[in-house]
Image 1 (cartoon, helix red, strand yellow):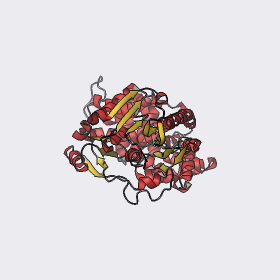
Image 2 (cartoon, helix red, strand yellow):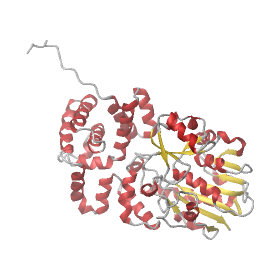
Image 3 (tube, rainbow, N blue to C red):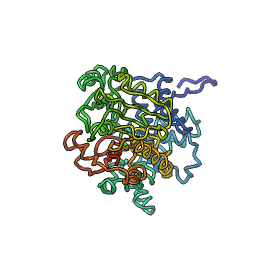
Image 4 (cartoon, one colour):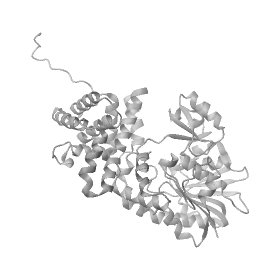
Length: 468
């Protein structure tokens, strides 16, 4: 072997750019950033495209979503070292490594090598040895075997603790879902299916507005996306893959990215039966504008929609969404509780701010930032908004109370406070006239509660009320 010069040192292998992006975003999220904002900017800065961009996206979102499970596994691989004493940067690197092996089925040798190299370059040689040892232990068991380990270790804490670790959810969310499932006519036995659905990336759904469904499908194909049918609505287009931002109909607002559950709420507002005048509608919390735009697209030309939004930057989003509808929509910035138009509106949509527990598929870090008390903190606002909605509606007018949460504290318990002032319509029965036949057969009214496992939507809630 040829002698090496004494001043020569083996060079380090550079970190894989996609994995480096994922680590960067995890660190930003740890500092308070939102993944859906941090990731696109980080991808652009790194110049990643194509397969590298897709891998970085799946790795980032998947790791954040499954972080609780990976932490439980890592904790059992550090040989007694207190988990909270491990450098947070090293923990993030191990989370990425665990997700590659057990979440993305990356070959073990590739996941091991890339994770150890990432640790060496970003956290130092000392950390890389620790990461190497832990990664070996993580890879020694299959996912099913790790499920058995977690079940055995956490059994003394009860079945909820086991399921929380296995499915990567805080225990309090399981408790909230259990109560909502029972209130919705389902059973606690369905909880595992809901949690599993939360851990699958949400497909992109598109609502055609000023163009036909066929036009949106062709547009998607031109943008190299793969369009398919929706789960609930005949007119919805769902992308199996592809970037909707490349579609002309999205760029010119003739169609909009909108979860099918949200689309259905907009349909309910305008298709619920109403006696008498029907020319002035109010969307009290309109941002970011999806429901407003869908309502405007479906409304009779004689209807004027008044769209209110508290925050200016969200009102700008509403303005963009309703651009094709011109004077049919009138915008207002301000607190919806102080609109000051008692008894004016024929139909009122109040899509209230909430804990967001129904959209965990789309916001991978949200489950780790929310607390049980968050929903309690929203109650006064939600009650105030529904109070204002009832006040704004004319006698005999329609109020649709909706929110993207299944938590009974934010849904039916809010509505039940006002049953002396409103008549409750059967929202499920009305929805069945709108959706594909059979797609809502498993749920009962009068309140509509959607679920990601059964309907492939966010866990939207809607109540339809007639002002007495």
